[in-house]
Amino acid sequence: MKIVNFSKKNDNTFNIIFDFLKNIKLNEDGKLIDFNNLDIESFILEKNFNELNETLYNFIFEIFKKNSKTFFINEENSINYSLTRIFFDFVQNSGNKPCLVIFNSHAECKNSFNHTWLKKLIEDGFPKRNILLVGVRNLDFEELEFLKKNNIKFIGMNSFINNIEDICDSIMEFTSGKIVYVSINLNAIDPAYAPGTFFPEVGGFSSREFIYLIQRINKMKNLFALDLVGINPKKDINKITLQLCAKILAESI
Image (cartoon, rainbow, N blue to C red; front, top):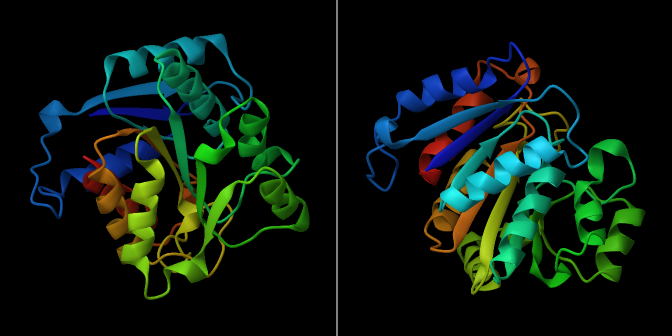
């Protein structure tokens, strides 16, 4: 599996996550985590990538051409628009159907700088019927109207009460026949389990619930790429969030 770490200069977050990963010898399916077979590459972010950049575009497009599965890691969500837009272009060029599954407490459909990337992607033409938002629990009226107007499917947290297996089945059904990109913002997880995120929202997934979701998703043969963003080490407590990041990565291998 290809792993791409986006970071700013002198950022040590990924190294800490990787050190925790090294302590996980097997994932919960009993699969050996062979570090010799992990193709890890870093990309230094020297500017804001809310807008497409030719250097980044070519870098990611080549990765998609050469790898059947890629895991991206970045502290902030500023990279999301670029990654998903390049994924959209790549899959369309190959004649397949792109599908986007987003785990996030927010819909990312506002007009504000930090919460607009999904709205921008939809306006660029990403197929609306192939987008699924999971774990949303803080919408404003503007976002709700946008989602309804564009028929974007979303699953709120109440749907998961005593029903997580059935919801997983519905996610599998939704992604069937498509090439899948899964975007994970750590704020999808309750801050009791992942305090180290930028915009925490109570009432989210437990770490156990989310690990189960990732295990189910990782069994999909059509899973092409994942990203993990929203990592804020400054808010973390005893590095529990970074340990969870390593666990999510381990269960995605």
